View 1 (cartoon, one colour):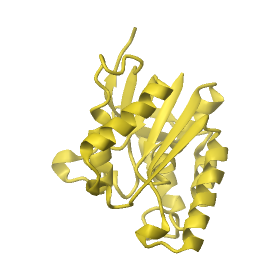
View 2 (spheres, rainbow, N blue to C red):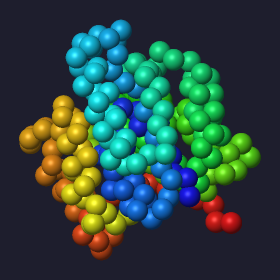
View 3 (cartoon, rainbow, N blue to C red):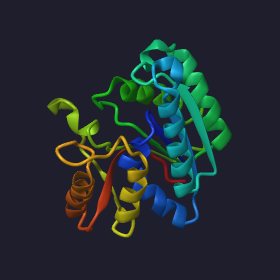
View 4 (cartoon, one colour):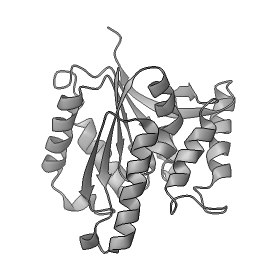
Length: 220
């Protein structure tokens, strides 16, 4: 199957679905990746930092073995500056090229506005008659974003993927993003990543799991 994951920012794919992507790859599925925002000098980042981030993305790309990666390089924390129609058209073009059976996207109520806007734009592309290739659409749980949703919109997962064999490699991949992982109490720390996977695993009677919210599933 073709699996497409959409990251509002580089690292979201690893925090939310890193173990699942590694497991899918080992199962013979073809992986594809859209990065929506990225650092650029015109956004106020130094050339050195931009170069460092692009090297991190290249290394993460190799670690997962993506068939193809799109780096849209929109402004971080500035996705609201783009016309929604432009976003929808851009995502739909890539979806039609990949024709994924499985689509992994951010959670609708993540605290970051980029995540919410991207969810709405991508979800608009998933109508069955417009994307008949799609069989499964689900939202991932991204540490320090999804857990910050207000209580009435709390993430309540209904799909659990056993990543017990992949938790160490998931953390290794996360370490590639040097500025995105740190010691506690920084939320994206190794113990928190492992602890969340252990907590979700306990729910599913597995050692370590990644949790998702199933938006739609079609059984042919």
